[in-house]
Image 1 (tube, rainbow, N blue to C red):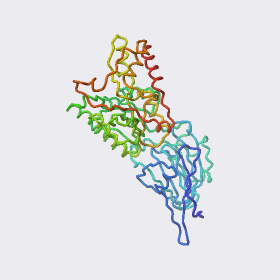
Image 2: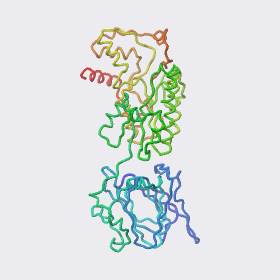
Image 3: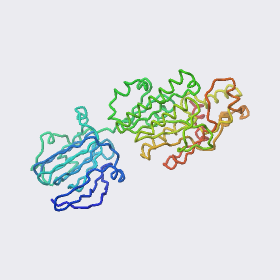
Amino acid sequence: MTIEFSKQLKATTTPIPGVVLYDLPVHGDNRGWFKENWQREKMLALGLPDFSPVQNNISFNEKAGTTRGIHAEPWDKFISVATGKIFGAWVDLREGESFGAVFTAELDPSQAIFIPRGVGNAFQTLEDDTAYTYLVNDHWSADAQGQYTFLNLADETAAIAWPIPLAQAELSDKDKAHPRLTEVIPMPPKKTLILGADGQLGKALRATYAGDTSVEFAARADFDLTAEASYADRNWKNYSTIINAAAYTAVDTAETPEGRAASWAINVTAVANLAKVATEHGITLVHVSSDYVFDGTADNHDEHEALTPLGVYGQSKAAGDAIVSTVPRHYIVRTSWVIGEGNNFVRTMASLAARGIAPGVVNDQIGRLSFTEDIAAGIKHLLETDTDHGVYNLSNDGEPQSWADIASDVYELTGHSRDQVTGVSTEDYFKGKSAAPRPLQSTMDLSKIKAAGFEPATVKQRLAEYLDEGANA
């Protein structure tokens, strides 16, 4: 066997999405050769997913013509040849448009290939004493074996041109009995779990992901964030993403002893449990944050601003953000003044207008509304584009307004006079009342989410649509 020495480390994409072929630098002399078969930092720089391998397996094959596969396992694999030479064949057995796509290549020790979960792997040895190695990101188990998907090596649709005809090759009886492509049940994708699915944002996420069978919705009754069993009783290996739309949001009640305990239980302790699960299983964690993590002294909050929460609710949200930031794959989506299906400020103002009430509304807190349909769409965009992980501000766009400005818009859009709304200061509004401190400035810089390719609708557009839908409901 002749090995090409001193290649440059190089990645080449293939017709199967996610399958990447690598040239590996092999250094040799009269004594033999040496190679870096797996070097995480260099591989990540080439774009290989950080798939966190946990086990290394070797298949030794005594004779040329030994043929194994086609097996699709529920984990990712980084495959290379330790010695000898193989003809490799890979078939996409995942649900989706690329189901049935085929890629073949000859591999010697100077090459490797990354095979994502659900892509069938097979090889035929071209030399005696060939060793084929697998670096995988999950441990084999009897339960996992039930999730395998198989394809017959002789499938006519895949039409793999085996160098040594299968009739002359060494095959196992099991491989001979595997089904044809028309009989294969495609491997479903890993699931997305949405927590808090009955809240304002949860309902918007239900609408955004309607019809997607890979998305699982969990309300409080389905997943109790405060119960240890919720985290222990689920097979997290089957999930790729958790979207945490659950939160304790009773800002004023959080200042009471009972509210403080509840706020920290949901916004901090539960988030820590989710972060632990996400980190251990390589899951992407999407966490929804709040403008209350700031004290409101800056005119425009960007993603790099230090956390300066004022009250208990804000402190608990800031603590949750800090925890989530330690998860390798995370998105912290920071919102303000959320409006969706359920009780909220806009519906309250519309109700007051309809009853002829002239309210006093705070006029020195400035920000933008965040409609849940846009938050949900923004989250989906971040996940689908797999953009850089981190913190993203996400509210609706347009000129910042006070609560009194928004109330006046609601009155006008529902056919009432803007003059019915009277502006009052935060201090006067809460005088004599037990209330949490509020940030006076909640406007968030949206340039980062826009640079990621997502353009939120303006508050003006969404408010008019929201009120029109409410009127026609």
